[in-house]
Amino acid sequence: MSLSKKNIILKGVAASPGIAIGKVFLLEDDEYCLIHKEIPKNARAAELKRLDEAIEKTRAELKTTYQKINSVLGENYAKIADVHIMILDDPVMKKDVVKMVDDGVNAEYAVFKVLDKIIRSFDAIEDDYFRERKQDIQDVTKKILGNLLGKEKKPLSKIDKESIVVSHNLTPADTVAIRENFVKAFATDIGGKTSHTAIVAQSLEIPAVVGLRSISANALSGSVIIVDGNQGIVILNPTEETIANYKRELDIQSAKSKELAKLKDMPAETVDKHTVQLLANIDNADEVKSVINNGASGIGLYRSEFMFFNRSAMPSEEEHYQSYMKVSKMMMPYGVIVRSIDLGGDKLTNLGFLSMEREQNPFMGLRAIRLCLKYPEIFIDQLRGILRASSEGKIRLMYPMISGVEELREANKILEKVKKNLRSENIKFDENIEVGAMIEVPSAAIIADVLAKELDFISIGTNDLIQYTLAVDRVNENVTHLYDPSHPAILRLIKRIIDAGHEAGIDVGMCGEMAGDPYYTMLLLGMGLDEFSVSPAQIPKIKKIIRSVSYEESKMAAEQILKCEDKESISKIMKRLKFKERY
Ligand code: PEP
Ligand code: MG
Image 1 (cartoon, rainbow, N blue to C red):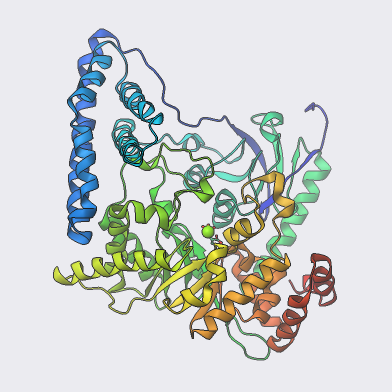
Image 2 (cartoon, rainbow, N blue to C red):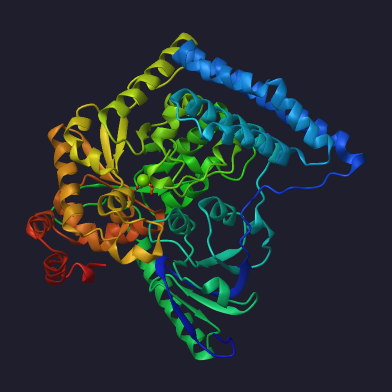
Protein backbone atom coordinates (compact mmCIF):
# COMPACT_ATOMS: atom_id res chain seq x y z
CA MET A 1 0.00 0.00 0.00
CA SER A 2 1.46 3.37 -0.98
CA LEU A 3 0.72 6.50 0.95
CA SER A 4 1.00 8.61 -2.17
CA LYS A 5 -2.49 7.25 -2.89
CA LYS A 6 -5.32 9.34 -1.48
CA ASN A 7 -8.24 8.13 0.69
CA ILE A 8 -6.94 4.72 1.73
CA ILE A 9 -9.96 3.23 3.50
CA LEU A 10 -9.45 0.44 6.04
CA LYS A 11 -12.42 -1.40 7.47
CA GLY A 12 -12.38 -2.54 11.07
CA VAL A 13 -14.70 -2.95 14.05
CA ALA A 14 -16.56 0.13 15.31
CA ALA A 15 -15.46 0.18 18.95
CA SER A 16 -16.42 3.65 20.11
CA PRO A 17 -18.63 6.15 18.26
CA GLY A 18 -17.62 9.56 16.95
CA ILE A 19 -15.32 11.06 14.34
CA ALA A 20 -11.82 12.40 14.76
CA ILE A 21 -9.51 14.03 12.25
CA GLY A 22 -5.86 14.40 13.26
CA LYS A 23 -2.26 13.30 12.96
CA VAL A 24 -0.98 9.78 13.58
CA PHE A 25 1.04 8.93 16.69
CA LEU A 26 2.40 5.48 15.87
CA LEU A 27 2.88 3.48 19.02
CA GLU A 28 5.46 0.77 18.60
CA ASP A 29 4.76 -2.50 20.34
CA ASP A 30 6.60 -2.15 23.56
CA GLU A 31 5.29 -4.74 25.87
CA TYR A 32 7.51 -5.22 28.88
CA CYS A 33 9.88 -8.16 28.78
CA LEU A 34 12.62 -9.25 31.11
CA ILE A 35 15.98 -8.46 29.67
CA HIS A 36 19.42 -9.68 30.57
CA LYS A 37 21.72 -6.78 31.33
CA GLU A 38 25.43 -6.89 32.00
CA ILE A 39 26.19 -5.06 35.27
CA PRO A 40 29.67 -3.50 35.32
CA LYS A 41 31.92 -4.43 38.24
CA ASN A 42 31.67 -1.05 39.93
CA ALA A 43 27.84 -1.20 39.94
CA ARG A 44 27.45 -4.72 41.34
CA ALA A 45 27.36 -3.72 45.00
CA ALA A 46 24.48 -1.34 44.24
CA GLU A 47 22.71 -4.09 42.28
CA LEU A 48 23.04 -6.46 45.27
CA LYS A 49 21.61 -3.77 47.51
CA ARG A 50 18.66 -3.37 45.12
CA LEU A 51 18.13 -7.14 45.27
CA ASP A 52 18.24 -7.15 49.09
CA GLU A 53 15.76 -4.31 49.30
CA ALA A 54 13.33 -6.08 46.97
CA ILE A 55 13.57 -9.28 49.04
CA GLU A 56 13.04 -7.36 52.28
CA LYS A 57 10.06 -5.54 50.83
CA THR A 58 8.59 -8.85 49.65
CA ARG A 59 9.11 -10.36 53.12
CA ALA A 60 7.33 -7.42 54.77
CA GLU A 61 4.42 -7.74 52.31
CA LEU A 62 4.14 -11.47 52.96
CA LYS A 63 4.03 -10.87 56.71
CA THR A 64 1.21 -8.38 56.24
CA THR A 65 -0.59 -10.88 54.01
CA TYR A 66 -0.21 -13.54 56.72
CA GLN A 67 -1.70 -11.27 59.36
CA LYS A 68 -4.51 -10.15 57.10
CA ILE A 69 -5.61 -13.66 56.11
CA ASN A 70 -5.09 -14.99 59.63
CA SER A 71 -7.32 -12.36 61.17
CA VAL A 72 -10.17 -13.01 58.75
CA LEU A 73 -9.96 -16.63 57.66
CA GLY A 74 -7.73 -18.21 60.31
CA GLU A 75 -4.32 -19.82 60.42
CA ASN A 76 -5.09 -22.63 58.02
CA TYR A 77 -5.63 -20.21 55.16
CA ALA A 78 -2.77 -17.94 56.24
CA LYS A 79 -0.25 -20.80 56.09
CA ILE A 80 0.24 -20.11 52.39
CA ALA A 81 1.97 -16.80 53.17
CA ASP A 82 4.24 -18.67 55.59
CA VAL A 83 5.21 -21.12 52.86
CA HIS A 84 6.04 -18.16 50.62
CA ILE A 85 8.28 -16.65 53.32
CA MET A 86 10.08 -19.99 53.63
CA ILE A 87 10.72 -20.03 49.88
CA LEU A 88 11.95 -16.46 50.04
CA ASP A 89 14.33 -17.35 52.85
CA ASP A 90 15.65 -20.47 51.17
CA PRO A 91 19.46 -20.11 51.53
CA VAL A 92 20.29 -22.07 48.37
CA MET A 93 18.02 -19.96 46.22
CA LYS A 94 19.42 -16.73 47.68
CA LYS A 95 23.00 -17.95 47.26
CA ASP A 96 22.46 -18.76 43.58
CA VAL A 97 20.82 -15.42 42.84
CA VAL A 98 23.56 -13.49 44.67
CA LYS A 99 26.22 -15.41 42.77
CA MET A 100 24.69 -14.48 39.42
CA VAL A 101 24.50 -10.81 40.40
CA ASP A 102 28.10 -11.01 41.67
CA ASP A 103 29.03 -12.33 38.24
CA GLY A 104 27.45 -9.29 36.57
CA VAL A 105 23.83 -10.28 35.84
CA ASN A 106 21.04 -7.79 36.62
CA ALA A 107 18.99 -8.67 39.70
CA GLU A 108 15.61 -9.29 38.04
CA TYR A 109 17.11 -11.58 35.42
CA ALA A 110 19.04 -13.50 38.09
CA VAL A 111 15.89 -13.99 40.23
CA PHE A 112 13.93 -15.11 37.20
CA LYS A 113 16.62 -17.54 36.01
CA VAL A 114 17.25 -19.21 39.38
CA LEU A 115 13.60 -19.64 40.28
CA ASP A 116 12.62 -20.65 36.77
CA LYS A 117 15.19 -23.46 36.93
CA ILE A 118 13.63 -24.77 40.15
CA ILE A 119 10.13 -24.47 38.67
CA ARG A 120 11.17 -26.39 35.56
CA SER A 121 12.71 -29.16 37.64
CA PHE A 122 9.19 -29.77 39.06
CA ASP A 123 7.66 -30.05 35.60
CA ALA A 124 8.63 -33.67 35.20
CA ILE A 125 7.07 -34.69 38.52
CA GLU A 126 3.42 -35.74 38.32
CA ASP A 127 2.40 -35.07 41.86
CA ASP A 128 -0.14 -32.69 43.43
CA TYR A 129 2.24 -31.65 46.18
CA PHE A 130 4.94 -30.59 43.72
CA ARG A 131 2.40 -28.89 41.47
CA GLU A 132 1.33 -26.74 44.40
CA ARG A 133 4.92 -25.97 45.38
CA LYS A 134 5.61 -24.98 41.78
CA GLN A 135 2.74 -22.51 41.94
CA ASP A 136 4.08 -21.16 45.25
CA ILE A 137 7.52 -20.58 43.77
CA GLN A 138 5.95 -18.88 40.77
CA ASP A 139 4.01 -16.58 43.11
CA VAL A 140 7.13 -15.69 45.07
CA THR A 141 9.06 -15.03 41.84
CA LYS A 142 6.38 -12.64 40.68
CA LYS A 143 6.33 -10.85 44.01
CA ILE A 144 10.09 -10.26 44.04
CA LEU A 145 10.10 -9.24 40.38
CA GLY A 146 7.22 -6.87 41.01
CA ASN A 147 9.27 -5.15 43.67
CA LEU A 148 12.38 -5.07 41.51
CA LEU A 149 10.71 -3.76 38.39
CA GLY A 150 8.71 -1.06 40.06
CA LYS A 151 6.41 1.22 38.11
CA GLU A 152 5.27 0.25 34.67
CA LYS A 153 6.36 2.43 31.77
CA LYS A 154 3.64 4.50 30.21
CA PRO A 155 4.59 5.02 26.57
CA LEU A 156 1.39 6.94 25.91
CA SER A 157 2.30 9.51 28.52
CA LYS A 158 4.97 10.73 26.08
CA ILE A 159 2.29 12.24 23.86
CA ASP A 160 2.26 16.00 24.32
CA LYS A 161 0.15 17.24 21.41
CA GLU A 162 -3.24 16.30 19.98
CA SER A 163 -2.85 12.97 18.20
CA ILE A 164 -4.59 9.86 17.00
CA VAL A 165 -2.89 6.76 18.37
CA VAL A 166 -2.27 3.93 15.93
CA SER A 167 -0.94 0.70 17.34
CA HIS A 168 -0.93 -3.04 16.80
CA ASN A 169 -2.75 -3.42 20.11
CA LEU A 170 -3.59 -1.37 23.16
CA THR A 171 -4.21 -3.01 26.51
CA PRO A 172 -6.80 -1.60 28.90
CA ALA A 173 -3.85 -0.43 31.04
CA ASP A 174 -2.45 1.48 28.03
CA THR A 175 -5.77 3.13 27.43
CA VAL A 176 -5.98 4.28 31.03
CA ALA A 177 -2.81 6.31 30.37
CA ILE A 178 -4.65 8.00 27.50
CA ARG A 179 -6.91 9.69 30.01
CA GLU A 180 -4.08 11.93 31.04
CA ASN A 181 -3.15 13.31 27.64
CA PHE A 182 -4.10 14.55 24.22
CA VAL A 183 -5.31 11.45 22.44
CA LYS A 184 -8.30 12.27 20.21
CA ALA A 185 -8.96 8.73 18.93
CA PHE A 186 -7.27 5.43 18.40
CA ALA A 187 -7.06 2.70 15.80
CA THR A 188 -5.59 -0.77 16.29
CA ASP A 189 -4.83 -3.89 14.28
CA ILE A 190 -6.52 -6.24 16.72
CA GLY A 191 -9.47 -6.21 19.12
CA GLY A 192 -13.23 -6.77 19.20
CA LYS A 193 -16.24 -4.56 19.91
CA THR A 194 -16.55 -5.47 23.57
CA SER A 195 -12.84 -5.69 24.38
CA HIS A 196 -12.01 -3.58 27.40
CA THR A 197 -9.88 -1.37 25.21
CA ALA A 198 -13.04 -0.51 23.25
CA ILE A 199 -14.98 -0.01 26.46
CA VAL A 200 -12.38 2.43 27.81
CA ALA A 201 -12.54 4.42 24.53
CA GLN A 202 -16.27 4.78 25.07
CA SER A 203 -15.79 5.89 28.64
CA LEU A 204 -13.23 8.47 27.46
CA GLU A 205 -15.77 9.51 24.84
CA ILE A 206 -13.21 9.28 22.05
CA PRO A 207 -13.79 7.47 18.74
CA ALA A 208 -12.03 4.15 18.20
CA VAL A 209 -11.83 1.53 15.49
CA VAL A 210 -10.20 -1.80 16.32
CA GLY A 211 -9.53 -5.01 14.38
CA LEU A 212 -8.09 -3.13 11.38
CA ARG A 213 -5.48 -5.89 10.90
CA SER A 214 -2.75 -3.84 9.22
CA ILE A 215 -3.18 -0.22 10.23
CA SER A 216 0.02 -0.14 12.28
CA ALA A 217 2.01 -1.31 9.26
CA ASN A 218 0.46 1.25 6.93
CA ALA A 219 0.08 4.45 8.91
CA LEU A 220 2.98 6.89 9.00
CA SER A 221 3.72 8.93 12.09
CA GLY A 222 2.61 12.52 11.62
CA SER A 223 0.37 11.82 8.59
CA VAL A 224 -3.30 12.86 8.50
CA ILE A 225 -5.90 10.26 9.44
CA ILE A 226 -9.65 10.13 9.96
CA VAL A 227 -11.12 7.71 12.50
CA ASP A 228 -14.80 7.10 11.93
CA GLY A 229 -15.97 5.19 14.99
CA ASN A 230 -19.58 5.21 13.78
CA GLN A 231 -18.94 3.16 10.66
CA GLY A 232 -15.84 1.34 11.89
CA ILE A 233 -13.54 2.74 9.21
CA VAL A 234 -10.26 4.59 9.12
CA ILE A 235 -9.11 6.77 6.24
CA LEU A 236 -5.40 7.26 5.70
CA ASN A 237 -4.17 10.16 3.61
CA PRO A 238 -7.66 11.67 3.12
CA THR A 239 -8.38 14.14 0.30
CA GLU A 240 -9.43 17.72 1.10
CA GLU A 241 -12.95 16.83 -0.02
CA THR A 242 -13.18 13.87 2.37
CA ILE A 243 -11.94 16.02 5.24
CA ALA A 244 -14.55 18.68 4.42
CA ASN A 245 -17.33 16.06 4.33
CA TYR A 246 -16.31 14.71 7.71
CA LYS A 247 -16.16 18.20 9.19
CA ARG A 248 -19.76 18.72 8.09
CA GLU A 249 -20.73 15.41 9.68
CA LEU A 250 -19.06 16.52 12.92
CA ASP A 251 -21.25 19.66 12.94
CA ILE A 252 -24.40 17.57 12.47
CA GLN A 253 -23.41 15.29 15.34
CA SER A 254 -22.72 18.12 17.68
CA ALA A 255 -26.16 19.63 16.93
CA LYS A 256 -27.75 16.21 17.68
CA SER A 257 -25.90 15.97 21.01
CA LYS A 258 -27.15 19.40 22.02
CA GLU A 259 -30.69 18.28 21.30
CA LEU A 260 -30.27 15.09 23.35
CA ALA A 261 -28.73 17.03 26.25
CA LYS A 262 -32.16 18.57 26.89
CA LEU A 263 -33.32 15.19 28.25
CA LYS A 264 -30.81 15.33 31.10
CA ASP A 265 -33.26 15.84 33.97
CA MET A 266 -36.13 13.83 32.54
CA PRO A 267 -36.91 10.35 33.86
CA ALA A 268 -36.31 7.17 31.87
CA GLU A 269 -40.02 6.56 31.46
CA THR A 270 -42.03 5.14 28.58
CA VAL A 271 -45.03 6.93 27.08
CA ASP A 272 -47.31 4.64 29.11
CA LYS A 273 -45.44 5.53 32.33
CA HIS A 274 -43.31 2.47 32.89
CA THR A 275 -40.08 3.59 34.56
CA VAL A 276 -36.69 1.91 34.44
CA GLN A 277 -33.38 2.89 36.02
CA LEU A 278 -30.85 4.33 33.60
CA LEU A 279 -27.43 3.99 35.19
CA ALA A 280 -23.83 4.43 34.06
CA ASN A 281 -20.76 2.22 33.78
CA ILE A 282 -17.50 3.79 34.91
CA ASP A 283 -13.94 2.64 35.47
CA ASN A 284 -12.62 5.77 37.10
CA ALA A 285 -13.85 8.40 39.54
CA ASP A 286 -13.07 11.13 36.99
CA GLU A 287 -15.96 9.93 34.87
CA VAL A 288 -18.58 10.82 37.46
CA LYS A 289 -18.87 14.38 36.11
CA SER A 290 -19.85 13.03 32.72
CA VAL A 291 -22.27 10.59 34.37
CA ILE A 292 -24.04 13.47 36.11
CA ASN A 293 -23.98 15.72 33.02
CA ASN A 294 -25.57 12.99 30.97
CA GLY A 295 -28.39 12.52 33.48
CA ALA A 296 -27.86 9.00 34.86
CA SER A 297 -29.62 8.05 38.06
CA GLY A 298 -26.72 6.12 39.56
CA ILE A 299 -23.76 3.93 38.73
CA GLY A 300 -24.63 0.40 37.75
CA LEU A 301 -21.07 -0.80 37.30
CA TYR A 302 -17.90 0.61 38.77
CA ARG A 303 -15.10 -1.47 37.20
CA SER A 304 -12.86 -1.22 40.26
CA GLU A 305 -10.04 -3.28 38.71
CA PHE A 306 -8.85 -0.25 36.74
CA MET A 307 -7.37 0.97 40.01
CA PHE A 308 -4.77 -1.78 39.62
CA PHE A 309 -3.23 -0.47 36.39
CA ASN A 310 -0.04 1.54 35.85
CA ARG A 311 1.22 1.54 39.40
CA SER A 312 3.92 -0.10 41.47
CA ALA A 313 1.99 -1.40 44.50
CA MET A 314 -1.38 -2.96 45.19
CA PRO A 315 -4.08 -0.45 46.14
CA SER A 316 -4.35 -0.36 49.92
CA GLU A 317 -7.60 -0.72 51.87
CA GLU A 318 -7.48 3.03 52.45
CA GLU A 319 -7.21 3.73 48.70
CA HIS A 320 -10.16 1.47 48.00
CA TYR A 321 -12.13 3.26 50.69
CA GLN A 322 -11.20 6.75 49.45
CA SER A 323 -12.05 5.94 45.87
CA TYR A 324 -15.51 4.49 46.67
CA MET A 325 -16.20 7.35 49.06
CA LYS A 326 -15.30 9.88 46.40
CA VAL A 327 -17.56 8.31 43.77
CA SER A 328 -20.48 7.70 46.09
CA LYS A 329 -20.33 11.23 47.57
CA MET A 330 -20.31 12.77 44.11
CA MET A 331 -23.25 10.58 43.07
CA MET A 332 -25.47 11.37 46.05
CA PRO A 333 -28.46 10.98 46.30
CA TYR A 334 -28.01 8.16 43.79
CA GLY A 335 -26.39 4.80 44.44
CA VAL A 336 -23.22 3.13 43.19
CA ILE A 337 -22.66 -0.54 42.43
CA VAL A 338 -19.02 -1.37 43.09
CA ARG A 339 -17.96 -4.55 41.35
CA SER A 340 -15.21 -6.42 43.15
CA ILE A 341 -12.13 -6.66 40.97
CA ASP A 342 -12.39 -8.42 37.64
CA LEU A 343 -8.72 -8.75 36.73
CA GLY A 344 -7.67 -11.38 34.21
CA GLY A 345 -8.94 -12.02 30.68
CA ASP A 346 -7.83 -8.97 28.69
CA LYS A 347 -7.33 -6.97 31.87
CA LEU A 348 -3.90 -8.02 32.99
CA THR A 349 -1.91 -5.86 35.28
CA ASN A 350 1.83 -5.52 35.46
CA LEU A 351 1.42 -5.30 39.16
CA GLY A 352 3.75 -7.42 41.22
CA PHE A 353 2.77 -11.04 41.44
CA LEU A 354 -0.39 -10.58 39.42
CA SER A 355 1.64 -9.55 36.44
CA MET A 356 3.77 -12.22 34.93
CA GLU A 357 1.62 -15.13 34.03
CA ARG A 358 0.21 -15.27 30.53
CA GLU A 359 -2.37 -18.04 30.58
CA GLN A 360 -3.24 -20.10 27.52
CA ASN A 361 -6.92 -19.16 27.77
CA PRO A 362 -7.02 -16.09 30.00
CA PHE A 363 -10.76 -15.49 29.61
CA MET A 364 -11.35 -18.96 31.02
CA GLY A 365 -8.53 -18.74 33.50
CA LEU A 366 -7.84 -17.19 36.85
CA ARG A 367 -10.10 -14.22 36.41
CA ALA A 368 -12.43 -12.05 38.51
CA ILE A 369 -13.96 -13.79 41.54
CA ARG A 370 -11.68 -16.80 40.99
CA LEU A 371 -8.63 -14.61 41.46
CA CYS A 372 -10.14 -13.03 44.58
CA LEU A 373 -10.88 -16.42 46.12
CA LYS A 374 -7.38 -17.63 45.36
CA TYR A 375 -5.72 -14.51 46.76
CA PRO A 376 -8.06 -13.56 49.62
CA GLU A 377 -5.64 -10.90 50.90
CA ILE A 378 -6.48 -8.76 47.84
CA PHE A 379 -10.21 -9.43 48.22
CA ILE A 380 -10.20 -8.62 51.94
CA ASP A 381 -8.62 -5.19 51.40
CA GLN A 382 -11.20 -4.36 48.80
CA LEU A 383 -14.15 -5.64 50.84
CA ARG A 384 -13.02 -3.62 53.86
CA GLY A 385 -12.75 -0.52 51.64
CA ILE A 386 -16.21 -1.08 50.15
CA LEU A 387 -17.85 -1.80 53.51
CA ARG A 388 -16.27 1.23 55.19
CA ALA A 389 -17.43 3.47 52.34
CA SER A 390 -20.94 1.99 52.63
CA SER A 391 -21.35 3.63 56.04
CA GLU A 392 -21.72 7.00 54.30
CA GLY A 393 -22.46 6.37 50.63
CA LYS A 394 -25.24 4.39 48.98
CA ILE A 395 -23.17 1.43 47.90
CA ARG A 396 -24.06 -2.01 46.60
CA LEU A 397 -21.48 -4.77 46.16
CA MET A 398 -21.38 -6.98 43.08
CA TYR A 399 -19.29 -10.08 42.33
CA PRO A 400 -18.13 -10.71 38.75
CA MET A 401 -18.03 -14.02 36.92
CA ILE A 402 -19.89 -16.14 39.44
CA SER A 403 -20.29 -19.56 37.84
CA GLY A 404 -22.02 -21.53 40.58
CA VAL A 405 -23.66 -21.21 43.95
CA GLU A 406 -20.58 -22.55 45.78
CA GLU A 407 -18.48 -19.66 44.52
CA LEU A 408 -21.12 -17.20 45.64
CA ARG A 409 -21.26 -18.76 49.08
CA GLU A 410 -17.47 -18.77 49.41
CA ALA A 411 -17.31 -15.07 48.52
CA ASN A 412 -20.12 -14.32 50.96
CA LYS A 413 -18.35 -16.29 53.67
CA ILE A 414 -15.32 -14.04 53.34
CA LEU A 415 -17.58 -11.00 53.26
CA GLU A 416 -19.24 -12.08 56.53
CA LYS A 417 -15.87 -12.59 58.19
CA VAL A 418 -14.70 -9.17 57.05
CA LYS A 419 -17.90 -7.68 58.47
CA LYS A 420 -17.32 -9.49 61.78
CA ASN A 421 -13.81 -8.06 62.02
CA LEU A 422 -15.01 -4.55 61.29
CA ARG A 423 -17.63 -4.88 64.03
CA SER A 424 -15.00 -6.02 66.50
CA GLU A 425 -12.88 -3.00 65.52
CA ASN A 426 -15.90 -0.72 65.98
CA ILE A 427 -15.72 0.38 62.35
CA LYS A 428 -19.04 1.40 60.87
CA PHE A 429 -20.52 0.01 57.67
CA ASP A 430 -23.95 -0.53 56.16
CA GLU A 431 -25.17 -3.70 57.89
CA ASN A 432 -27.76 -4.12 55.13
CA ILE A 433 -25.43 -3.63 52.20
CA GLU A 434 -26.97 -5.27 49.16
CA VAL A 435 -24.95 -7.98 47.47
CA GLY A 436 -25.47 -8.88 43.84
CA ALA A 437 -23.75 -10.89 41.16
CA MET A 438 -23.10 -10.49 37.50
CA ILE A 439 -24.68 -13.20 35.44
CA GLU A 440 -22.19 -13.54 32.64
CA VAL A 441 -21.26 -17.21 32.58
CA PRO A 442 -23.77 -19.59 30.93
CA SER A 443 -23.77 -21.91 33.96
CA ALA A 444 -24.88 -19.00 36.13
CA ALA A 445 -27.54 -18.03 33.61
CA ILE A 446 -28.93 -21.56 33.66
CA ILE A 447 -29.13 -21.62 37.46
CA ALA A 448 -30.12 -17.95 37.77
CA ASP A 449 -33.17 -19.05 39.80
CA VAL A 450 -30.91 -20.74 42.37
CA LEU A 451 -28.51 -17.81 42.56
CA ALA A 452 -31.31 -15.26 42.73
CA LYS A 453 -32.53 -16.76 45.99
CA GLU A 454 -29.23 -15.83 47.63
CA LEU A 455 -28.79 -12.40 46.03
CA ASP A 456 -30.22 -8.91 46.45
CA PHE A 457 -29.89 -8.05 42.76
CA ILE A 458 -28.58 -9.36 39.47
CA SER A 459 -26.81 -7.63 36.61
CA ILE A 460 -26.46 -9.32 33.24
CA GLY A 461 -22.97 -9.06 31.79
CA THR A 462 -23.70 -9.60 28.12
CA ASN A 463 -20.12 -8.92 27.02
CA ASP A 464 -19.01 -12.13 28.62
CA LEU A 465 -22.30 -14.00 28.45
CA ILE A 466 -22.23 -13.73 24.64
CA GLN A 467 -18.55 -14.67 24.46
CA TYR A 468 -18.96 -17.77 26.61
CA THR A 469 -22.34 -18.89 25.24
CA LEU A 470 -21.46 -18.54 21.57
CA ALA A 471 -17.81 -19.54 22.06
CA VAL A 472 -16.68 -16.29 20.42
CA ASP A 473 -13.64 -14.52 21.84
CA ARG A 474 -14.75 -10.95 22.52
CA VAL A 475 -11.34 -9.48 21.68
CA ASN A 476 -10.70 -11.43 18.49
CA GLU A 477 -11.45 -9.50 15.30
CA ASN A 478 -11.50 -12.73 13.26
CA VAL A 479 -14.74 -13.86 14.87
CA THR A 480 -16.43 -10.50 15.37
CA HIS A 481 -19.09 -11.44 12.80
CA LEU A 482 -20.18 -14.31 15.08
CA TYR A 483 -20.48 -12.11 18.16
CA ASP A 484 -24.21 -11.54 17.97
CA PRO A 485 -26.37 -10.29 20.86
CA SER A 486 -29.51 -11.16 18.89
CA HIS A 487 -28.68 -14.86 18.61
CA PRO A 488 -31.84 -16.67 19.81
CA ALA A 489 -29.78 -18.49 22.46
CA ILE A 490 -28.67 -15.18 23.94
CA LEU A 491 -32.13 -13.65 23.91
CA ARG A 492 -33.63 -16.71 25.58
CA LEU A 493 -30.93 -16.73 28.23
CA ILE A 494 -31.50 -13.06 28.97
CA LYS A 495 -35.23 -13.61 29.32
CA ARG A 496 -34.62 -16.58 31.57
CA ILE A 497 -32.37 -14.50 33.86
CA ILE A 498 -34.85 -11.62 34.03
CA ASP A 499 -37.71 -13.99 34.87
CA ALA A 500 -35.63 -15.81 37.48
CA GLY A 501 -34.77 -12.52 39.18
CA HIS A 502 -38.37 -11.37 39.20
CA GLU A 503 -39.55 -14.72 40.48
CA ALA A 504 -37.21 -14.27 43.45
CA GLY A 505 -38.47 -10.71 43.93
CA ILE A 506 -35.24 -8.94 42.97
CA ASP A 507 -34.33 -6.36 40.32
CA VAL A 508 -32.47 -7.38 37.21
CA GLY A 509 -30.13 -4.99 35.44
CA MET A 510 -27.79 -5.25 32.48
CA CYS A 511 -24.36 -3.66 32.39
CA GLY A 512 -22.94 -5.29 29.26
CA GLU A 513 -22.60 -3.24 26.05
CA MET A 514 -25.90 -4.59 24.74
CA ALA A 515 -27.71 -2.39 27.29
CA GLY A 516 -26.16 0.68 25.65
CA ASP A 517 -26.95 -0.32 22.07
CA PRO A 518 -30.07 1.62 21.00
CA TYR A 519 -31.00 -1.19 18.61
CA TYR A 520 -31.91 -3.42 21.57
CA THR A 521 -33.50 -0.90 23.94
CA MET A 522 -37.10 -1.66 23.10
CA LEU A 523 -36.51 -5.40 23.11
CA LEU A 524 -34.84 -5.33 26.54
CA LEU A 525 -37.58 -3.09 27.89
CA GLY A 526 -40.17 -5.53 26.62
CA MET A 527 -38.34 -8.44 28.24
CA GLY A 528 -38.80 -6.69 31.59
CA LEU A 529 -35.28 -5.39 32.31
CA ASP A 530 -35.34 -3.09 35.35
CA GLU A 531 -31.97 -1.34 35.04
CA PHE A 532 -29.90 -0.34 32.01
CA SER A 533 -26.31 0.47 32.88
CA VAL A 534 -24.44 1.98 29.95
CA SER A 535 -21.40 4.09 29.15
CA PRO A 536 -22.11 7.72 30.13
CA ALA A 537 -22.15 8.99 26.53
CA GLN A 538 -24.93 6.53 25.58
CA ILE A 539 -27.32 7.65 28.31
CA PRO A 540 -29.12 10.42 26.36
CA LYS A 541 -29.70 8.16 23.31
CA ILE A 542 -31.09 5.31 25.39
CA LYS A 543 -33.24 7.70 27.38
CA LYS A 544 -34.63 9.18 24.17
CA ILE A 545 -35.76 5.76 22.98
CA ILE A 546 -37.25 4.75 26.32
CA ARG A 547 -39.22 7.99 26.40
CA SER A 548 -40.52 7.50 22.87
CA VAL A 549 -41.89 3.95 23.08
CA SER A 550 -44.72 2.24 24.88
CA TYR A 551 -44.03 -0.54 27.36
CA GLU A 552 -47.03 -2.52 26.16
CA GLU A 553 -45.82 -2.35 22.55
CA SER A 554 -42.30 -3.32 23.65
CA LYS A 555 -43.63 -6.34 25.56
CA MET A 556 -45.51 -7.56 22.52
CA ALA A 557 -42.47 -7.09 20.29
CA ALA A 558 -40.26 -8.98 22.74
CA GLU A 559 -42.78 -11.82 22.93
CA GLN A 560 -42.77 -12.18 19.14
CA ILE A 561 -39.01 -11.99 18.90
CA LEU A 562 -38.48 -14.61 21.60
CA LYS A 563 -40.48 -17.08 19.55
CA CYS A 564 -38.09 -16.74 16.58
CA GLU A 565 -35.80 -19.61 15.83
CA ASP A 566 -33.21 -17.83 13.70
CA LYS A 567 -31.51 -14.48 13.37
CA GLU A 568 -33.16 -13.66 10.07
CA SER A 569 -36.68 -13.83 11.49
CA ILE A 570 -35.55 -11.72 14.42
CA SER A 571 -34.09 -9.03 12.23
CA LYS A 572 -37.25 -9.01 10.07
CA ILE A 573 -39.37 -8.20 13.12
CA MET A 574 -36.84 -5.61 14.26
CA LYS A 575 -37.11 -3.94 10.85
CA ARG A 576 -40.91 -4.05 10.85
CA LEU A 577 -41.05 -2.42 14.24
CA LYS A 578 -38.69 0.27 12.99
CA PHE A 579 -36.35 -0.29 15.94
CA LYS A 580 -33.67 1.52 14.03
CA GLU A 581 -35.70 4.65 13.26
CA ARG A 582 -36.32 5.26 16.93
CA TYR A 583 -32.82 6.53 17.66
C1 PEP B 1 -19.82 -7.91 30.88
O1 PEP B 1 -19.16 -8.95 30.81
O2 PEP B 1 -20.85 -7.72 30.22
C2 PEP B 1 -19.38 -6.81 31.77
C3 PEP B 1 -20.12 -5.74 31.94
O3 PEP B 1 -18.18 -6.95 32.40
P1 PEP B 1 -16.78 -6.71 31.68
O4 PEP B 1 -17.05 -6.06 30.33
O5 PEP B 1 -15.97 -5.83 32.55
O6 PEP B 1 -16.22 -8.07 31.53
MG1 MG C 1 -17.70 -9.40 32.26
